[in-house]
Structure formats: C-alpha cells, structure tokens
Length: 125
Image 1 (cartoon, rainbow, N blue to C red):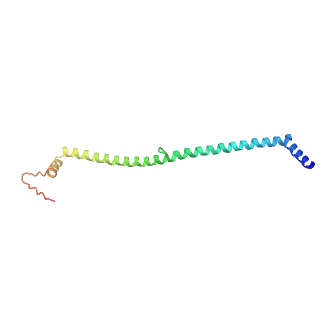
Image 2: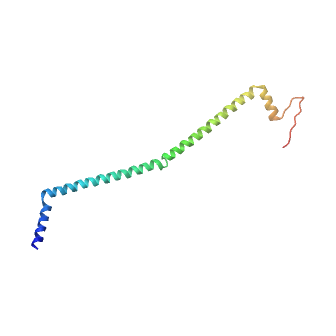
C-alpha cells in the first residue's frame, strides 16, 4: 500500500505542477477557441445556406424572376404584333377614305352594290 500512496502523491504532484497546469489550461483555452470558431463557422454556413435557398426558391426568388422575364418577352412580342396590325389597319382606313378605287371596292364587296349596267350574283352556301 505504501507504494500506491506514493504513486498517488506523484500523480497529484504532476497535476499541481505549475508547468503542467499551464499547459493543460492553455490547451483548454485553445480547444475552447477552436470549438467557438467551429460553431461560428457552422452557424454562418447555415445562415448563408438559408439566405441562398430563399434567394433561389422564394416567391420573389431567382427562379420566379427568370419565369417573369420569359413572360415579359412573350408579352412584348405580342404587343409588337398588335402594334403592327394597328398600323396596317390605320393605313387601310386612310386608303379607304382617300382612294376612290378602295371606296368602290368596299361598296361592291361589303355591301353587294353594283353599277347601273351590272348584275350581282349571290350564291348561297
């Protein structure tokens, strides 16, 4: 038993030795700092992941933005087509109002009118 007591005293002396105590305390501080840095980095990565997913998949996210841009292009094409039709119809209106040939053509085709010495044949479908 005395040998066991001596071993315990030596172990206790090693634990309380100033040099070993500083190393273990320093090691604890370093490991605590590393742990805090790891936790901070993990939290930062989680926050960035959540923000990134919201930017991509949210109602106002990137995917919605791309779909809206596609719709905008389709609508712009439709607007351009309708504007061309409007321009063509305006030109046709001006021609009908000013050109006597167009006036006669519209009267003959649209109203079924004829000159005094002509006959109009109407076919039923």
